Length: 345
Image (cartoon, rainbow, N blue to C red; front, top):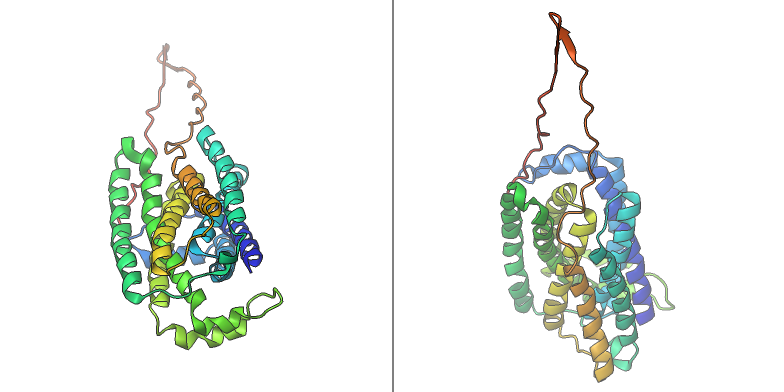
């Protein structure tokens, strides 16, 4: 089952990376999004076919993520998901034309090494021990502070982004805020995938994919748990906040920081909440923890500044005009582009 989980994690990485890039291209064609008007934001997003294609890719990645959390420990799953940021950086450079820094390229090498470390740590008898459910009190103790801190940090990032000299670091602040919300989503997805009601959908045997009909039949029982409510809360807030932030910031900066923060949150809180054991073998323990820490640390250490600006071509000087027999130099007053400042929340 561990091999099936690794394959599902790699598939989720591809789907998520393509989805983010498609959404970023679509957001570049839309007017500025205001998080204070969530209904208008959703209406504009649903009116973009390119954004819908990206959201469908993300939804397929979500389905693959259910399989991953069903078959792999949360620490190993987050290490594999972090490796998907290598593809995000490549697609952002090729498809979006975003310029990456040397530190970002070095981070991709570190993340690839972390992927190998986490995959090797899954070889052992205890790799099949996966926590299924979490105690409600422990889960809420981890989730509620993040649900409060996420929107607060996002509002603070919006206020700082109004200052031109602080705009370069706003992408990191937005990524941390959204990462906390998506970290709670990861715990909710992990809980949904491990419920006994959903076990029949995944116990298909023979390496076959989950039974979608059995999973739909289990929906009534799932609503008796806190997992779907946490997922809906973080999903709705994350949709509006992440799309507005993705429109303002580089995908190659926002997505890695968001993934790193959500990964750290899910590993720390998920391992405790779901009671998953770490590998008993010291070597595999170092590989598991070291690989996850290397992947997340490399992402957090990326260059937080704006990419090098491309120099704009110098405007051509206007031709002199002749007024009453005299040559007069004509100049035009240049005004800055009126870019609406991001709203606080």
